[in-house]
Image (cartoon, rainbow over all chains, first blue to last red; front, side):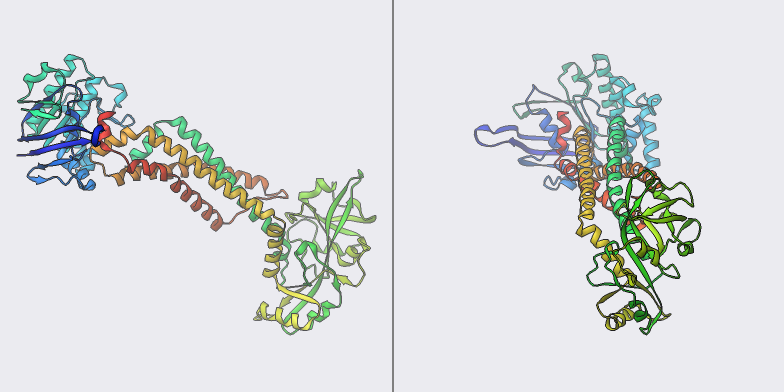
Length: 222
Length: 374
């Protein structure tokens, strides 16, 4: 089991103004699992993704990645876990605009300890696999939204993380491009044997995932 | 991380250029103020440092070279008789008024030289230093030719109504008082100014024998010759510099301006860096989310501050070089030494690093979960 969450609870504030964003969420994912995380606005989707992505510490509960407990109080260790175990795809791709597509991938690969040559080789392979090889030396500004999101998927995969987290990766794309991106995400997570959690509002995408997770008022209904 | 940091800066090239120009001017301002200070220190003590004498014997409580008090001429043989002294010569210094042909008057410092011209001009353009012993002869510096109304050798002028003839022109032998030096013989210098008696000089310059310590010989002179002070050349040069820089307030003004230059540059770099960091916080949050350690992001901010500082320094140094070259033959030269310039550079870059403090704080407070709110 690559990811195991036990009673994850996250509260913001306290007393009357307090808000419980996650309420005893338990979840287990195997490598190769592809999950769609659905829920209305404010239901806790992004909070859950942030906690699983080691960006936010839960108020209660614990989480294991690859069998090891995540030390949420140790910020340096959290950065290392994100660097080695997690790949992110954000809503708006968030590529560095002043770097070329391949450079956007290579810096992440190098940061994960791949080395320059290996990072370049892996980046070229991924860009090729995702059909954006011709953009490798172009900057994000000249690419379409769909192309940028494909490059973002490649960036999330460059260090072969066992967990992929995507936060509404289709929100800024039209249906056709959004569908392609999700197809690529699910395909690549299987190819790379990574567990995938994708936050989405679009129920038409559900059939493309192996599992669906519904969250409402911080509670998960599997 | 260095590449990311630099390219993040270059992303907004116009802002980078404007900031660089601003920093360049501030570095130039700082370097120029320090250059002015060094130039003044060099200028006000130039005759002392170039006189080839080890010891200056002066009237008690003489504040600086330019304000000497007369001492009896017989101090010369008295100094000469002190063990360890190889030779001693007189030196005369007095303020006077140079009368130009157009009627204008110029305040000058008349320097009277003894037989061997010790303390005379060390860099001659036209003529020889010995011409001061010709009748009515004076040597003027080329920097002040226009100010004095001198067109060529042989021109005649008056000093307090006494005729003088320009027989030599020296180069870069300046005063820091803006009143040109006029070199002549001791006898003629006294002749130009009737306030002084024929048996007075201002200083006695002495040279120590080989192997003798100037400090020891100085002590012997002080003990043997009454009513005078004996200083080594270095001591007299320092006293003169201190007088002009500290007692007149000139040096403090310059130092305050230099410190202001440093401070303003620190604020400008700090402000620019903070703006750049704030603009790029979503990118830093994204990098943090992707596992970039906070120290790497902090390194990026430091690289940016040093890059801004270095680019400003390079442009500012080029401006300083030009200004120093242009001022070399003026009464107020900008001068420096490699050590002083290196110190200014180091202090300037340090101020740029200090300026990154606020930006570093912003980066260290960064919440990587911000990436989902971008």
